[in-house]
Image 1 (tube, rainbow, N blue to C red):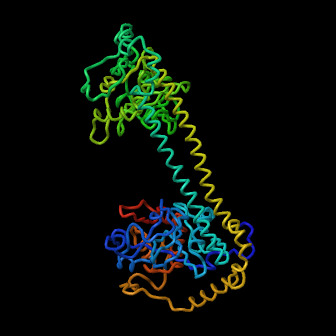
Image 2: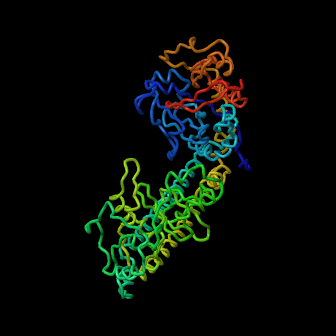
Image 3: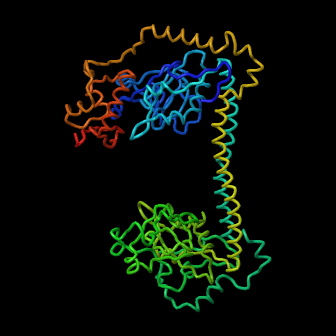
Length: 583
């Protein structure tokens, strides 16, 4: 811990706060729960996932009185700190009213004189420390005993309030900046889409066309080029047709061109990968010729993660016609919608496509592969594809559709200018995106550094100098500690309050002595849920925090010793335990 300001002190949190765990009733009994606001407020760590406010009043569902009475959940008072102790460790919120929690929390109830907002921010500042103390193989968790040892730095009461107020102000400003910056990636995506939409409609090069009139239309260029072709790419009549009304207006020198007319003169210039009889998983290898799956096609970029490989000898014998070598257009046949496109990179060697990926060798005498990629990735093209795609569970396009798909094609010279301008603008947006990502990292660090300054006393250094009387005498930390000690001693001597109308029958659930979970499973001779195992081992459903901790430690030890095994959760989200085969 860092150096303390004069008049501050460090403690273990259990020295000054009461630590309370929670509980969960049987999940497969719907009568244990109630809609939010109609029962007893109850939270799980999931209720704090993505939750950004300081206080919380209830979770996504309440406990019914029956559910509350049947488990170890306890009501904790307003102002208590809810601290998730597993899945994950370190979510924090202040109870806005009386609440209960499940066993995924260790909750701290502080005495009068400790500002809940101050405690909230301090617990947020030590999340990494708490995570480092977590133990467990399935997931990290901090026990009740460990939770009591978490550090807690205490300032005089009036200074706590000052620190909390300053953090409210500073962190609100940081959160505002964070929100504004987090919106920029969405704006950049819209910007890129608007650039591409302008490109494939002719608006991006409208002035350029006036200054650089074309001698030939796109149709004329293609017609001249087709004279040189031998018709090796087979075309059959497509099962669809586009009405002129389905297409949008384009400049006069452009043309709506069927896609197959832009392919090289080759029988496999447009094709997908091989099917069933020759494309078999038994020929996959950990190295060899890369296989291009749907997951490798990004919107404008090729992904190399999670690679798969074909046996090289099988590839040479059966799959070279389905292969790419660099610069080919790759388009997905499946998707929502299909039609996502990228180029296969140059210089990384040969690869082959699967049946779900179309590869196209573009005839660069009349069309640029990169122009076609931008068109297929445009929102306009996605809408056109949605009209054609078929499939009950997942939309798809087929090869005839792809060959006959209409392309809004400019003359070749204008395509080059369009691609140049699009890439220039996208590169500019990428630079902004990089700066945004760096700023987001900096802001995340700024939050923690601000918390660090607060609990080193740096934010209130001037305030302490100006207000010595507010941190001394009756306002000093020593006076506060005496008050806390007196209050805790008085509470310790008070009889514990019992819940009313519990309806419990603890004699049915608790033995005079507990047994190990291994012994309980041996006696039961069948799998047990966590709740059933707890009862079989002799623990009451309203066991104390210490008893629950003993039970969970016993489970952990048995799992580590491999005398029992935890199997997957059922549809009611319950863990089941069985004896190990080695037992």
